[in-house]
Length: 259
Image 1 (cartoon, one colour):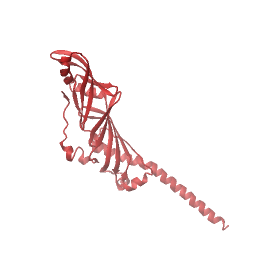
Image 2: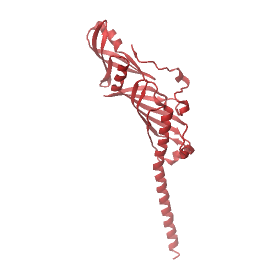
Image 3: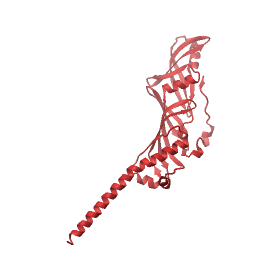
Image 4: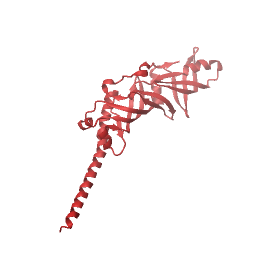
């Protein structure tokens, strides 16, 4: 009888350990959803988003991140945001080092989230770009030409209507993009080419992006342009929404401009 007691004790301990591990694993699976919801709500408030973004969190084990209040892999998707008439199809942001105190998580009340580093992809479809250009009175349309840009439009040149088509370069500034024709395939008239090129050149402001994003690069796809972007001085706090500091304060959005 006495020999069986230690065996029963070991089994009880083993069962308790298994139950505890299962409980911790369940908490580790459930907690990311809770934290993701808190971050999504705060992002919507602080960035003035029309809809709540999709938020997912990575990293395992997760409870250590909760304990430290430092989430090292946060992915945020913002869909269909409209700023100054331009619809942005998607912003996919990756936050590295989002700081949420564990007490805020426990109480379900997050007021401020500083972020160490943020990179993003900003996607503009040609459909949305052309809709914006039409709304601004432009006769120019843009589309893909392989990995480049195709520009076209019915233009008023010296009192005559000219249907012009060409390929263009795209240049990226922090808060605007510019399409500049480099080659005209129609019409052939060489004497009119400079005037036509000037009329086909357009600048489009891309402002009001969430997380103080600034554009850095562009990749052309069949139906859209995907911009690389980086966030600066990112703090998810509704009390400082729209504020910028340092060099950013000198950046001003220019309205649509057809040169």
